[in-house]
Length: 610
Image (cartoon, rainbow, N blue to C red):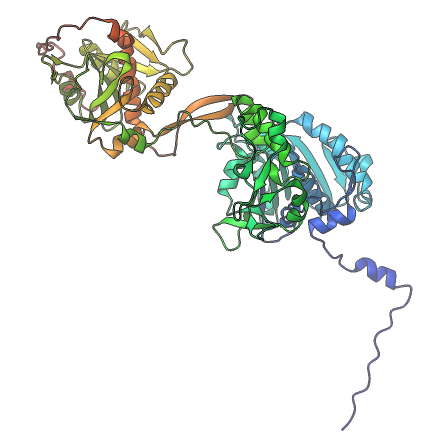
């Protein structure tokens, strides 16, 4: 058998080896490994010097998600002071050094962007040898930092023009819940910035981080929209079970046991929800190092967007005592408690005092069936909401101390049918009868036709409209000023709908009885759902927080809620709040049947007004 000649390995000349070494592809490190090998934190940081992953181990997977080719968007919902911004800066540094591409960092304002460059980014670029070698400081500007192969643009969310030009591969969005809202001319800043990454759809990275403010805030909406959500779980040193650190598991003595607030906080301990054993701050470092991120929601096997959530109990810089002390200090001040919920618990603030539900409405049923009056009834009012295809209406009985009950509700298909409903004579249990004394009709849509209808039936209905801004009182009576119209000079009631929704929600929560808001026996679910289709939330508007009633879901109908608002305002116009002070009034006589007039065929001529 002929032997194959031995092939000697190719001998690389000594002078060629350095050149080949330069050409060899550089091994790409995950962001966490890159940071530990390269990042130097400045003296202004709480912990200065070389970056150590062991100090904040919960940041490792968040940073490495930026290196994962299957992950496109990282959403970090966080409390303050847990290293979230530093993790974002590490991801930027890794991209500059290992995989250059145009990048943008967006802050709440231009001023903050400039301060961040001076205080954090420039020191990072200069103190890290791997970045300093690529940094073109002489070519850089305040908001455009130049490097070999890429530029890092920095801007404020208050500059829409800067957010809507120049393709971007790496997008970093810091403290997004402090961004200004969208305007009539522009989308919200996050949407504008994300538009810039379209050219890099196959390899873009979007890193979004913020302390939450409200459920309607940008970061919470991004968390809910992510394809997967992860929370950090740590092992209990006693039972070994992996648990999620929750504020509810912090226990401290009661005020009766320990009157001194500082001492109460000092005795705070964490109770494991699995075994009931006590965990202390001494246990936390080892627990954090052994911790792991676990899916709490997963809508895809290979999610392109992943949200990470944690609270301040995980912070190595904060003790359990400090968390409890802060809570005890602010718990009785709504504004300060709001900040605690956001900045310490990383949860959105939600004022639940005026929260309502369909079940709550059904709990307000009495023993009086529909179309019958409770024995305490002294006044009947109506509320009317006009839609394109029908007219929603409600009739409500009123008694002393604002006690009220829905007597009937429904939909009319014409003005004539509505007139017949509102003209119903209701017998009183004690004798006599009542009719709807006054109804308010929403004139926000099909305005001219509604004005004409109210003019023809001015004995029982007045046009109304929700006010676009808060009023000093619950309503304001105005006059229609429309030259050439028959309705010119007709009364128009402007209604502060928010105040009436507050009143309805508050009284709905009272047990049935005096002063409560009630419904008839056998009330249907659709009415209950519509009456509670809105809830009151806190939103940011023009840089400040305002409370508004908004629909709970996009397509929810709220017509019966509007009807009840107008029925309540009609009751105010009839002095319902002073009913208890008034002597019992004689039963009103039924309204006379309408006499023939030149306008008697108006309904027929305008039958398409709904």
